Length: 352
Image (cartoon, rainbow, N blue to C red):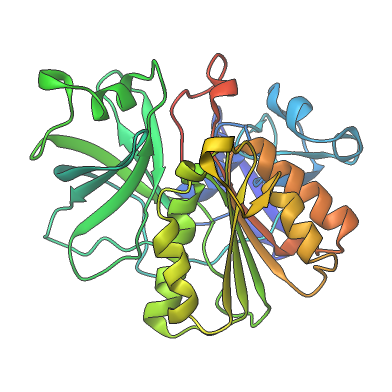
């Protein structure tokens, strides 16, 4: 059985097969709605159901505030319709050469960026170009059917390769392989399978608004790709990057980020550390990264914000920036990944 989904305000329609989520059916039809995690751990795919019946699943009650639920909002990555639906959601337009594909990849290099962060370079098939927007992510397709998601850490290029930043998650099957030793460790020339690109986290280049980039941990990876794209393309807009970590060592490419200030006119980098110890001798900004943004930018009404990191950071920023700093809700773009606190109930290794 199939159902018709109508998307307001554009009036686009697509078919959905019984059992599919609204988001999966939209992507299959070539319509890209805002989304990030696809697991119900963030609210990027938040949309309003105007009419129709559906199973929302348990995630919206944990993620969305009661007033949103009362108004008919849900998470489109979890909603499974049982009738035709009319929804309100904005379609995201991608470059025409970008399409989701499955393919084999070969490991080119595995390099430590920090004790618990590894850069993994993958060789892509050279038969055709692999297009993606800087900020998007791919998924590893594991042999047991599980998937692990990681953002590309550099913009696309003529070379058929991508780079990822992978943080070690203790007990995680995939990251234990990446960080293992001897025969258990990921090796050069190893063959893996991926699918992608996914996600609606990328720079909206049709705007000239000042930008706030905000990252925690390896949420830095997709923002790195976006900023390097801006430098390569000569995109000049006032921009600031706030990168947060518990300890200074968590800012594993601090020198690179500082160097961007000389490469990108109007760019400023602000590292923020929340749990520095005396031996760190930290003299920079302290506290939560999104509060540092609010201290410096009490009025965000004319800005765009691009945030990537743990869901609690992303959702706190979304809430506080819109309610306290006047940021238009439609100008908050986010990519959230699962933190260790989510391991028991969600995909244990999704990380940007």
